[in-house]
Each structure stands twice: as structure tokens, then as C-alpha cells.
Amino acid sequence: MLDPTSVAAISAVLGAVGSGMANEAGKWAWESTGGAVRRIVGREVPAPVAQDEQDEVARMVHERIRSDPRLAASWTAFAARVRRAPVPAGAVRSDLPASIRFFTDRKEAMKQLQREASRRPDGRPRLALVHGPDGMGSSTLAVHFGAQPTRLFPDGQIYADLGGGGSGGARDTGTVLRALLRQLRVPDEEMPTGTDELGAFFRDRVADRRLLVVLDHAYSAGQVRPFLTPAPGVFTILVARTPFPGIDAVRVPVGPLSDRDAVRLLTDITDKSTVAAARATLPSLLQRCGGSPYALRAAAYQLSAPTLPPRRAGADGDPVRGAAEDNYRLLAPESARLYRLMALRAWPAFDAAAAARTTGRDHEGTAELLDDLADRMLLERGTGDGRYHYRHGVRAHAEAAAIREDGIAACSAALHRTLSGYADLAASAAHQALPKSWRVPAPTGDRTGQSYEDEGAALARSSPSWATWWRRCAARRSPATRTPPYASAARCGRSSSRRASTRCCCPHSASEHGSPTPTTPRAPTPEHCTHNSPTPSPS
Image 1 (cartoon, helix red, strand yellow):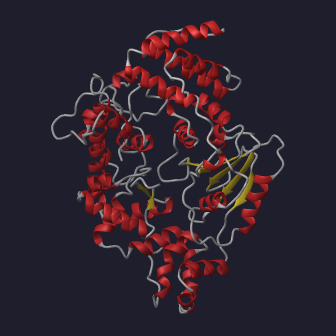
Image 2 (image 1 turned 30 degrees about the vertical axis):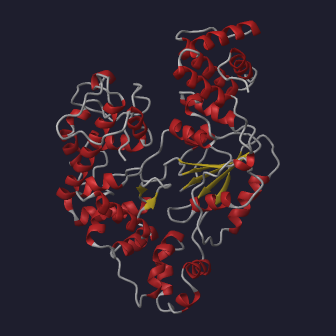
Image 3 (image 1 turned 180 degrees about the vertical axis):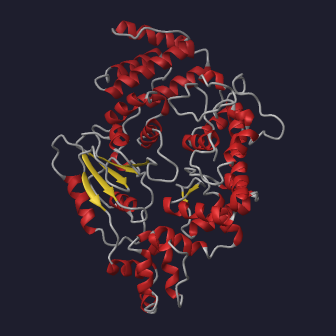
């Protein structure tokens, strides 16, 4: 076996990468190789053109790595990546969320998707826009279609939540593109840095694949355009609450279930005897649920009740909020308080640690309460990462309940605890990721936050959740951001977290960003913050 650190092996790698520069992916691989050579040799090296130049670069790399085991290991790992054989189609995993056990109706919608996915290629993107109100199952339809046994997508199914229709706001385009590329098993170091270049790189990587791409919670043509490709083997499904103009897509509306299909769904969830015994309450329950699959699933337990619980005035207008009200009334006091207080801001996601800070409870007990809320369909679970988020209509109900039942003072105090906890976590993770940087001073006093094993662990903690960090900054930026009655908590969070906020909520001083004064922090955006330091993840 050829030694990967020999001159011949290094030259072979350079030749293999150089011969694949006909497309954008090949060009980026060539640039990555140039970066690897520069790091090993310690200076800029002109790109080789002729074979003798390629051999000379190989000898330069060999001279450096033969006496440095660390550099040798780095080159060996790099060479293994660029020469790795393509992943067999059958081995590509599906990255779609889990589908559901009982899927009712939607036959016409499934046929529409099947026709668009299998039509003859004609240069137009294979594109469908699935749209329906919150709780009607538009996301479920897209995932269920992708989960069906099909030969149309042998290279896999990838998924991204764009966040445009969720409670946490839209995600940055570059962040989503990187997430999709990781699902395609592209190493981070091979991805370009600019958003436009990332879009071109993504489209090039999928150009010769037979792939399903599901983009959930889309809201505009401009948002989704970087992800669209005319590649004949790629079928993209956009999921939105309402249709939007500007794209040439097959529109697939998802409306309420008929009473017949609603009864069938309830029968699947429970059993025939339970539905048959619920003759007295079934008509009222169907009316309350309004054909919403989410509301029907959340209300299935009520079939065995002799009468339906009363609702507050106005709750019946939205089946999702109505179902949340019914389940909320069954919660124990500590669960109900957690449910209310975590809804005070539209966090994209949060874990037990964040919820424990907000409520002042212990971590273990809070984790159990979160799990119970998810079981009652008042929270949505993440993809096995211990994080949770609200459905849009459910969060609206929880926020209104917090204002009504907890009052301004309690809401402000809870939000203040959340913001202070995020600021401590941010400062701690940023300092541990960049311990030698003057821009990230060590936290003082009792604001040390969590400890990490090494700089890499702190950096890993910093990367997953930019969106929550921007939300935290926006909450602290102005008490009039959304003008709720408890918005004064934004001032509390700002004053109590002054040491972190003077760096505009990222690890850099306000003066470095051109802020008018250090005491006027502003919420950063990926375009605003140009420093190459990590953005701490709050949960």
C-alpha cells in the first residue's frame, strides 16, 4: 500500500483534485487543497500547472510532514477526504423528520406531488409549494411523501426548517445551506464562506443527484431562491402557511379534514369502541377541532369524557389555540407555569437548562416537565437533541396566558432571568473558545457560566443556534420590540447584563462595530458582525 505521505502519493492527490476542476465543486476542492498546502508549507505556494510543478509542490509538502507527525496526520486526513469514493446511493440516509403513524386523507395532494416529482425533465425546477394554516398538516404531508418507498430519490432526502412560519423567526440563508450540505456529507472546511458562493456550491453538489429537498416554513420567493435548482433529478418541496408569488411551483393546498376523515383519524388514534361510545360529545369535538389534524390528535383523549370542558371566550376561533387551551387546563401548576413563561419570547429552541433558569427550578425536574408538555403536544421536540420549541398557535396561547395569569412583574422577572442566563452562557463560551483574545474578557464574579473540556467544545457549543442568539439580542435591544406589557424586562436584561451587552451581544466591543456609544448595544446580524469569533449558543 502506498504511503499517503510519500511524494508519489501527495502528487497523485494534487493531480486527482486538479483534474476535477470542470465544475464549481471541483474548483472549491482545488482551493481547499491550496489552503492545506499553504498551512503545511507555511507560506503561499503558486498553484502547479505542469507535472513537474506538481511534483515540486509534493516534495515541499513531503519535506514538512515527514518530520512533523501533527502535519502528517493533517495531510493524511485531508487526502482521505478528497480521494474518498462517492457514497453509494443505497447508503445515503434520509434526514427527514420522523413521519407519523396515522396519516388520513390527502390522497389528491399526494398525487399532485407524485406527478411533479416524476414528470419529464424540461429545464424547469421540479418544485411544489405545499401550503396550509398552522395545524393542518402541511409539513406532515411533505415529510410523509418523502418517507414513502420510492425509486425517485435514491440519493437521499434532506430537510431544513427555514423558520419563516415558526415562532423563532427566519434562519440565515448561509446557515441553512451549510446544514443541507452537511446532510450531503460535505465537510465544513470544503464549504465556501460567502452566502452567494454557498448557494452556487450547493446547486453544483446536487446537480447530478436524484434527491428530495424539503424546505419547511418558507415565506417568500426571495428566501427560497438560493436553494432552487433546475437539476432534473432534484425535487424540492416548499412548505408554507400561505402561498406566495414569485416562484413557478405546483401549488398543493392543505385544508381541513372532512368530518368523515376526522372521525377516521380519531378511530385510528383510539379505537372503534371509544369513538362509538362518544356519540354525545363527538359532534361538538369535531366542531371545536375544525378539521385540524393537530387539534384532533390533541383532543383525542376527550372522547371518553361525558362532556367537553368549557373554553374561554374567543378560544374556538383557532382550533390550534383551542386545543392548547383544553390541554393547558389539565396541567399541574408547575407545568403550567413553565408552559407560560417560556413563551414570553419567540425562542427558536430551548433546552432544560434555559427553562430551569427561566423558572428558577432545578434542571432535572425541569427536564421532566418539558417532556410532559411535549407528550401533551404543547411543545414540539427537536430531532433528538434535547431541545424544544412551540408551535406558532400554541405559543400565542401560552404568551396570552402568561400576561393574564402571571402579570407584568412576574413576566419581566422571568424574562430577565432568561436573558441574564443567556448572557452568562455567551460570555463563558466565547471566552473559553478564544481564551487569548482581548475582545473576549473572562467573565467575573458569579457569571462564569458553564465550563467546557477544551476550546473545541466551547466552539461547538457556540455554533448550533445563531437564531436564538439574535433573538436574545433583539429582546434586549429595545423594550418596544414587540411592545408587550412585560417588555420592560428588556431593560432589566440590558442593565443586568451590561458587561456582555457592550459587545453588541457578540464577543466584540460596540466601538468595533461602529456603534454610536458602548451603552447602545444593537442586535447583530450575520452581515453586521464581521469578526471571526464564535457566536455562543444559548441552549
